[in-house]
Length: 258
Image: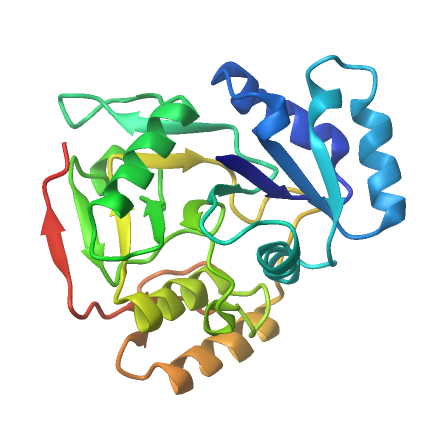
């Protein structure tokens, strides 16, 4: 099992956030793959990691520029079919979990989260992707897993690698996590979402990452509406400054996992 992290021009931030979380979790550096856009970026990251005994063991590979283009290329060229992969953005500060009361949040080490996620997939009927609650807010989290069409946030999710081109995110980075969820629903009949876990990160606030402009988001939302009219609707209540959507679930079930 590997952790795969697309990153661009953030060799310092990735150390302070995602890699620091993995180190706290006891995750072996040799099971981490950082995806970069070109030889210049590879030189930058290798230079930042080379003098640290743990960081220097991290594998750095060149794929393509762009978050979803990088992931697609990795699925085709770097990651063998059937491998269990945890995908993370480079700015994840922590993964949090609901405590037994259902109202408090505590640190969740990655081996525990990954074990729960891939165990859920193994017990499902052929599903290939698990995700977590999109917001680290106990009010919106739950001590249950969900199986079916449920949105999986793109900054942190797990996948059993399948090179099927029908799973490729082709509309670009804006709302790519919605597109990926919908494509997994088309091909496999749904996803698993573990609602007692959630990533701690600052969406749209980190310099150097993928920050889509409103026009591009609107364009991709329209594509999603046209391609999946039965599953995609506008979320008019959420005022984020860009177009927001919700998934209208179909063929869904809620399972008590814990």
